[in-house]
Length: 449
Image (cartoon, rainbow, N blue to C red; front, side):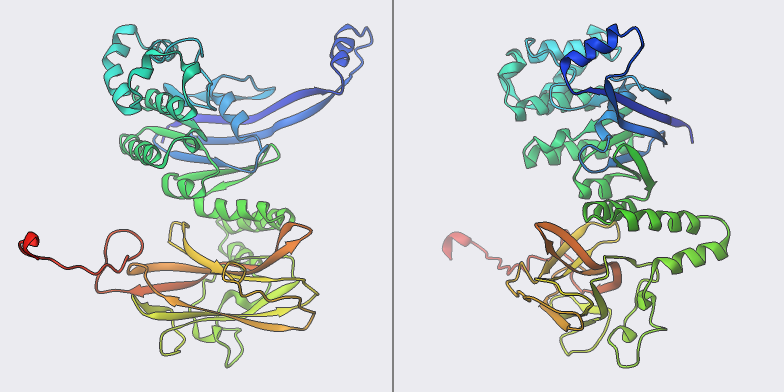
């Protein structure tokens, strides 16, 4: 496939001065003395986007995501490296970018169209569709400085996606609109994807990344940590949020080894990710729950080791260990945890996700008011979660963890992502991911009832 965007070794450096006068001193210095410190917003970042791909860029605040989009769109110039773009870009960056606040909405539409290479006559043909999508009424004839943030993003997004872009770049713009407008925008983005438009998006909404992106790029502190399938990248991102960056670097090394064509190296790498014997039933002690379960051989496991989930299981309404649950019936998730150090208030959790990695449901002992209290090294606990199975029939993944808070910071003691497969058997699937369990009555001549 042809590349729409090719980013090679891009670096962006900002000069930071302690005092405004230092900038003047440096410019006038005959000895070329430096009064600044270099801040790397991006450091040697490389990736490519194929034509027709939808790619997400994720990372914590300050990781360089927006800076990268500005360099790709030409708003910023890189300090090093190069970016090549093949195709007409329509970019929706942070609120206000590319708009003159003194101009009316109509004037801004014409101005932005001209900047994208369209003639006034071409924009006149597109305006009815843009205004219908934006749905801001007569405000389109008012200066945009009078717009609310919601009206502004409606007009900006309507313009960006209704000019038939070859490349659409979106930076967190949809977080401002209401839920109905967001749904409208995502539907339009789906249409663009099907037409072959290349989409590059920055967002903190992980569900959007999982649903709309073919590939994901993870940045942290200006550096590219990894790129790959959205589900994998979201899991790595959650590790960074949980303060597990050192373990993350080790895992990435193992993941790269697993992707080598050498099958033996791949097998060794996959095995090394699982430091405990969680990986399968072969090493499970006789009589343990997990010996009866189907376990993911590539489970994503991490934590600081203060606690260990050493056994687990799914039980049906009759108490039988199984990975198959009938829709509409009660079922139970059991987790057994052994503690290796003192912990003030551990929290036991479970999450059910779909195959794309979207969190569908889950809870924990803190949410449910089942506080554990202080525990000591050597203590063992069992958490038992019992609930109705209202998900539609299909295949799901069950994750579980033991976490807590230390000095106000969230800490992961042991987490097992996508540990067990969960198959829901159903003879009636309704619309969506779960069943509302509606009771339906149909009457003839309701006015007579």
